[in-house]
Image (cartoon, rainbow, N blue to C red; front, side, top):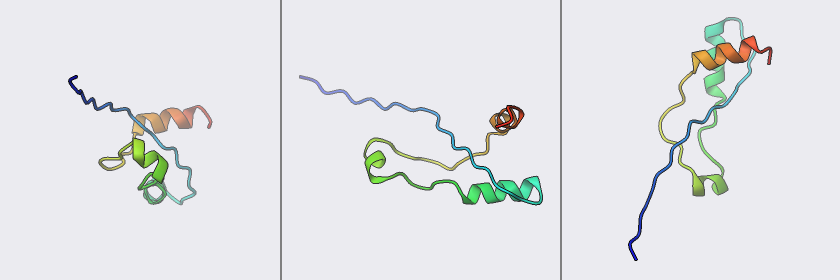
Length: 67
């Protein structure tokens, strides 16, 4: 019987809260706290490819919700 392979992609996000003197310092501090790998169990099922990018729109929405 033929075999087929499919790759599925999904957007993932991570929320980081930091204390800082300025917004730019806060952004830099938040980048330092981002996960760089997955646990062994998750890594078996998922791949993290590429670099984290700040989602300005989602950040603004999150802040406006008072979270």
